[in-house]
Length: 447
Image (cartoon, rainbow, N blue to C red; front, side, top):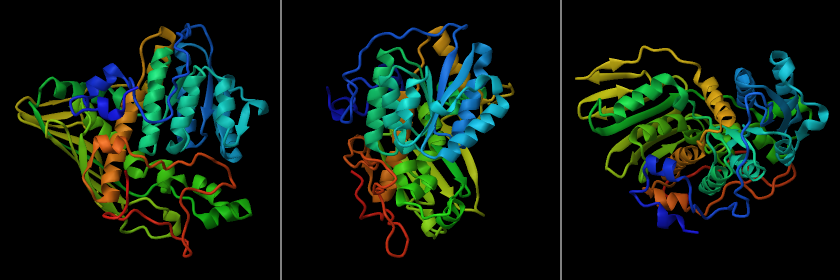
């Protein structure tokens, strides 16, 4: 087994290299070397594919509905569900039954509540949907691959470098087992994005010299401790509170640069056909100020440098009342592209005028079609590498240092605890005043 520093040279950080070579001999985390490399039979169009939903929040419910909507490709049925919160599990199943009564068959004995419920749900299914908070994704993906299951997993696929390494290793085993893996970076399944990126890569704006990526908007949902304890009529353990309010804890969500902004970073990586080799960044928290804001930042500004010297200028912000934009822009020697608007300006101007299926649905259609047609389909490596791009930016901002990709991927800091339970200590605890410690640039260690 090679060490990452032996294989992740600057030249190797091309997207093409990773998508072709996969994660061969990757890395320093828990590997799946004991797994057999047998070929798994694909499902014919008449075979019923059994689905397990792991993580029953809003995105999980949406992904399950989209998976069930692939019934035009062949029969599908939701047969198992798992979540650490029973109310979320019950709510999701009730909503899905209302929309897909004939395709939801999840009796009590296939409803699994608790930290180990995912293992039981995986055992029931052919296809596993992973939509828990991102910090849990690596272990669950590894378990699904070990069990020989096809996977759809939401982005980001990890919250730290150790998790990325674990996903890369499992991705390689998935390829050996002929398992199909989709990742929720749905822009890759948008006709407008696909055509725009192709034109850029074909040289319609000349050589790409720089790029900009934005996810500037308002704060997302928040679960306040006082409201939760009033709702459930009791005090919550620290672990339970953090899982209910998971967006505001880095070990669970990766910070919003990973949980949201990954989409825009991924698009620029796609355009460049490469991943950054280093990053410089700044960030912090300016306007949110309550214990329920956890430990995450409310703004980041990053410079991601690629091996050819070009820079992606990146911003993400969760500050109401400010300029907002969720977009990607590319500057070339012969023109410019607004990638999200599918528009090119310059000497060879163009704008996409075609239609296209909803990208959220299309990503599931593509996955289930690949399962039934036995076509290569593994988005895990790119999902891991774009997740690592976001983590690299977070590391640079948290530390205030210029961080090289190599060092970031090799980071020995693991955010997710080995033992999980309602009575287990959470990775971060509030101080006497109820506030959580935050990363301090110039002081916080990230490697």
